Each structure stands twice: as C-alpha cells, then as structure tokens.
Image (cartoon, rainbow, N blue to C red; front, side, top):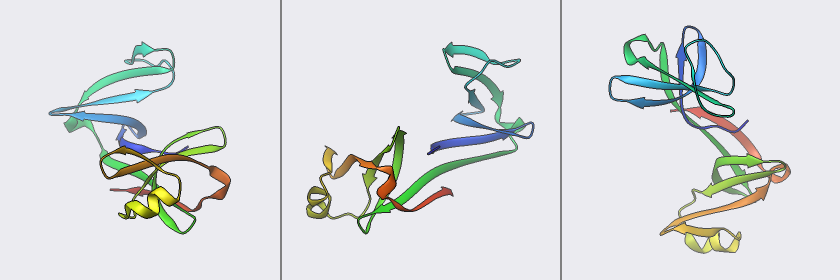
Length: 121
C-alpha cells in the first residue's frame, strides 16, 4: 500500500487521518464502534487532538529511470507518481504530463521502480 498523507495513532492503532484545529478525523475501511459511515469502505471518527498518541505525515518515494518521484497512488500494477527532480525537460522526456505549472505527474509500471520507501515527516 502506498501512502501519501497524514496518519495518527489513537488507542494504539494507526489510522489514516486529517487534522483540523483541535481535533483529528480518523478514517478506516470497515465499521467499528464510534466510527460513522461516510460511504462504502470509508468510516470516520473525530477525536480531540489531545487524545492522539502520534501524528505524522507519511510520504512514499521511489526512483524510476534514475529520477526521483513521490508515489501518489497505486492501481493494479501501476503507480501514480509526481516527478521531484525539478527539471521540466527531464519530466517531459520521461513522458510525464504537466498536471499544473511545474508539477509533472504520470502513471508508471510498479515493477520498474527502485528505492521504494516510506518516510514519516
């Protein structure tokens, strides 16, 4: 599983999270006590930030064809990546699309990436 976003540990369990001032929204894919259904496969509970044991931003990185990327998502055998090398001609040569000014993203085969790592920021 590729992660890019906040995670929080609450009562010894790590959840996908979203901080919001003095509270943190915790998400999980299945029903549980205290969690309300947002949609199928998505349940949320809001807890005070004081109850959170740990809050961090998690980012997954990799390299592809010798260049650095952030992994944004995965689908089957593909990874959605964002080029972080800072050189537009290189991003274009790699077939990345300009998502917005200076931001290049694309789908690449997961089997071709190297140095796949998760960082806690």
